[in-house]
Amino acid sequence: MQVQGETIAAIATAIVPQQGSIGIVRLSGATAISIAQTVFDAPGKQPWETHRILYGYIRHPQTQQLIDEALLLIMQAPRSYTREDVIEFHCHGGIIPVQQVLQLCLELGARLAQPGEFTLRAFLNGRLDLTQAESVAQLVGAQSPQASQIALAGLQGKLAHPIRQLRETCLNILAEVEARIDFEEDLPPLDEDEIRTSLEKVLHQVKDILATADRGELLRIGLKVAIVGRPNVGKSSLLNAWSRSDRAIVTDLPGTTRDVVESQLIVGGIPVQVLDTAGIRETEDTVEQIGVARSRHAAQIADLILLTIDAQAGWTAEDDEIYQQVKHRPLILVINKIDLASVELLKLPAQINKIVKTIAAKNEGIDRLEKAILESVETGDLTAANLDIAINQRQAAVLTRAKIALEQVQETINNQLPLDFWTIDLRTAIQSLGEITGEEVTESVLDRIFSRFCIGK
Image 1 (cartoon, rainbow, N blue to C red):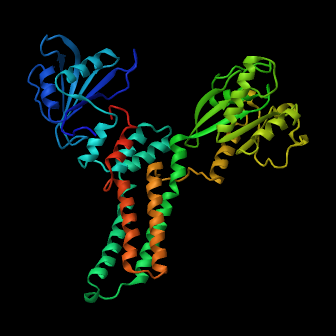
Image 2: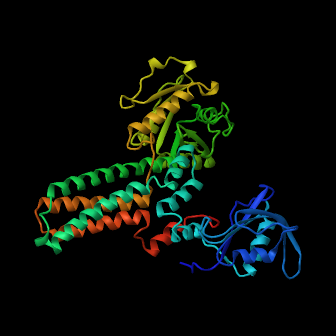
Image 3: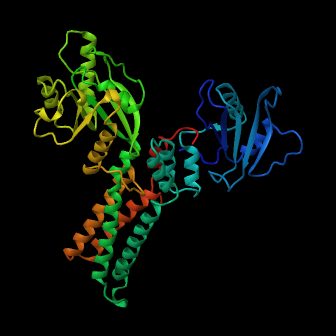
């Protein structure tokens, strides 16, 4: 971990050539304002006051070379994101202006910030707790409105608040137990029933919060859906109708799709990555063989399979062969081209219980398909409905340790072991809960968390 007193600098916006009208260079630290005063020329009598925006020019202090016409935002400690003096140069977008301004700040003594170092300083200076800091990264990476709302809830402390309450309850229980150990003769007997009740309530709440882990992961990362089937059943037409685009080439010739085509969609608030795969069949075409191999791989890594068949051709031996390869995966059967044949006459495997009928070429049945996907999600191990908070993988792992420790405390009480044994697992639970909010956390954990952030955040 770097020295916190150093002034750090970084480009805080995405830089793309010929795109983006504004590029921001951010500084934080004791010399941020003096660096700004050295390079920024604010014409007239603009006051250098906190939370003001100044207009002017950025110049090299030695050569007086004009680097950019820009705005300067001043945020003096402690009223800033890091609770240090923070400066932002709002430059013209593109690559060259912001890189030149950043280089100038580095020449004047600032250090290039590490990934997430601005947010790390906000945590170390008490501006954010660890759950809020992690929510910042989740908000930046949100792929759906629901994921964004969950991240905002975490940023507002809606996860930290119940965790702190649970930890406070455990601390009170520990204090009661240790008081009986040290001053047993001076205090009334310990109310074991009350302790059991309190522990049961804490454990129940811990389990409730743990239950949000998979649901939150689904909203953050999304669902990978693979459209598989033999050639010319309408897989590409289905993708195009679903994504309302012409991502995949559609012809009457089998084997048109030679590779996996991806499309990003939002279904019921859940990010969905749709993989349109090459038709699975035996072929002598070397390129098509590679496409078929990739299709099989896509089917194996997908969270959900859309096995697509042609209603006019019916359930063929080739369909059955593909089904045998994917039947162990969560699966929805999509019967396409239902306008060309009677679906009721199809002889389908009895094990398939989720069926959707579509006419992809006419954009019909897409709403039914989305409904079936959401039902598959809701009735499975993962659900994304009605979430207020959701923990991430790190928080889930730490909270699981707390859960195990609390269960061991209950077992210790039931086995009527001495009070000293109660305190061992109580301390473990308290420490674990503290790791979630950052009240008890190691430097290596912080490095691991903040290394996943972008540099300018």
